[in-house]
Structure formats: structure tokens, C-alpha cells
Amino acid sequence: MSMNTLSQELIDAIVDILADDRHSLRALCSVSRALRSQARVHFLRSVHLWSERSVVAFHESCLSSPEIPNLVQNLSVTLGMLHGGSDVRIPNTATASLKEPLQSHPVPNIQTLRLKLGSAYDCIHDIPTALLSYPLTSLTITARFVHSSYLLNLLRHYPALRHLDVSGTSVPYLIQEEEDRIPPVVLSIEDLSISSYILPFCLDKQLFAVHALRNIKLASFQLTSLHECQRLLENPDGALQRLHIQQPLRMDRRSILKLEMLHVPCLTLESCWGDKLAVTTVKWFIDCLEFGQGPVKTSRINILLTPSGNLDGSFLERSADEHIWTSLDSIMTAPRFAATTLCIWVGYVSLWYPRKPDADLLEITQRFISNALPGLRSAKRLQIHCKVLKDSFDEVMHLIEK
Image (cartoon, rainbow, N blue to C red):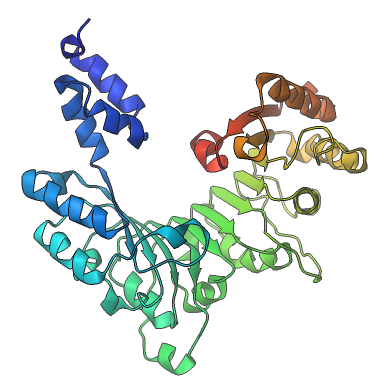
């Protein structure tokens, strides 16, 4: 059967399945005329302006196909050189080079903006004006602002925001005199990702209405400072539906306080870096479950684990940590958790192993966890998912928090 004879229903189904796979969509654009048109629409919904070269390519594409700007819904922009990690190789994208294509080819249907600001690009005047005029509903910022007023001035341009990710943002200097001159910004954020580097500033300035929050992700926190997030969870109207806690990257010597969170319907603990720290994090989470106050309104708990070595000898199977599983099974089979399902997700990151983890390892892992939680297994309130991951659980987060 020729690709050009496929029914429209089948073409739509193929493209919809691959909608989030940009490499496959790019390939479909060159397969056949029938698939090209539909795949192109999906492919052009997301545009990444990460370098001078990508800006030029976008400009030239818009000149040859004037309908392209109307298709763009998600835009990622990098301004300036980003230091550290993989971003160190990203070429500089100057404001001047972005100004012309963004003004000549406005993208009126943009909904999501991911903005990475390198050094010397943290002031509102360094950002192309066109980027400040979109009716965004979702904004992700990666930046280190020299002054907190820069962040306030940026957010002021997006009053319709519903999703805000500032987990990669920090505000190192708080100048009180300067802050007093700036009117407050109160956003009706529903989906928030935040880190310890910006939490005090956000709470102090009341950047968002806490009662409107539905989903919260806590990233880059130390266990000893997670209790500072309790104010975010104070949601008397019951709007808050999901809380996602990422394991901290390090520990300090301060005492670890518990977090009251059993009023949140869905809890996710992502404990994925280093066996010793993972054990401490899971223990803390279990203590929060055991000693949490008030009625349990949590219907689903996800615990995400990434062994840093082979299953044998990792924190999953060490006899010294056997009590973790025993405690978890005992607490979760108590009457107060009778309506709560526990989902254990184990992800083996293939890059960490000399050879790719196989189906046998996944089966061994699943059997071990099932045997370690006999009470929950008997109550049919245990789900176990074992995956091989390329990099992180972000690849399957849509399955975890569906």
C-alpha cells in the first residue's frame, strides 16, 4: 500500500501518536505528501531558538512559509551564554538577532514560553519586546536575577499565567528599598514548580494566590528546609490536588522537620540520586505518612526510585534497609490508609550501566518489591512499575501523574 493512499483517519492516528516525538515528526515530513502536511503542523507547534543558527533558520522559514508563525504554540528561547552543565555549549543568542524575526513574524497563538537567561541577560530591557506581549498561560524561567525587581517586572507582563516553573531560578539579592517602590504582582497560578532558591522571595512578595494552587512541585530543596513549604500547602478550599517532591541533592546537619501533606489527594516522592540520600529521603517520607495529622485524603502515593547500581546490593535490597519496606507496609495497611493506593516506580537509567538492563532485571525487581510489601499486595492496593529510562523519570511522568 502506498503511503499516499492511507485514509485520513489513519494519517491522523499516526501523527497523533508521534505528536510529542520531534525526531519522528521531522522524519514524517519527508516521507510522503499525505503525511507531510499533518506532521508539519504538529512539528511547528514547538519552536526552539537556542542559537544564532536556529534564529536565522526560523526567520528564513517564516519568509518562505508565512503561515508558520500562526502554528507556533510553544516557544523556547535562550538568551546569552549559560554556564555549567550541558548548556555551556549553547552559542550566544543576542537580543538584536531575535528582535527582527520576532517582530517581523509575531506568533499570536503562543501559549507556552521557556526562557533561559544567561549572564548579562537578566534585565527586562535585555528581553526582546515581542516576548513580553504574548498572552501566555505557561512560563518556565531559568535565570539568576541580580535583583528581585527584574523577576517582578518580567512576571507583570503575563497576568494570565496558570503554569509557572521557577525551579531553575534564583534571586540572590533582596534590596528592601528597591522592593518598596515596586507594586506587588499576584498571579492566579494553578501549577507551580519552585526551588529553595526562590521560595522565600515568592512567599514574602505573595507572587501567587496560595488558594488557587492545584499542582506543586518542590525541586532542589534540602530535607531540612522542606518544612518551609508548609505555607504553600495550606489550602482550606481543597483546590490542591498534587504534590511532587524531588529528592534533595545534598544534606546538612540541621534537624529534619516533617511536612503535613495527607490532605493532598496525590503525593509523589522522586528519590533518585545516591543510595544513602535516597534511603534518608524515603525514611523521612514514611515518617510524614505515619505522623501526619488529620484525616487522610490521599488516594494515591507514587514513590519513584532509581538504583545507582545493580539491584543486588542497592538500597532496594540491602538487609540493613529492610525495615524501610516493613515500616512502609505496616503504615500503609493501617485503617486510616484503607483508601490509598501505593505505586512504586523503579527506573533503571541505561546510561548508568555497562549494558542495558534487561527484562529479567525488571522482573526480579518487581518480584522483590511485591514480596517486600505483602500487606499491600494482599489488600490489592499495590502497583509496581519497572522501566528502563534513557535519562530520568521525566520521560514517563505523563504515566505517573495521569
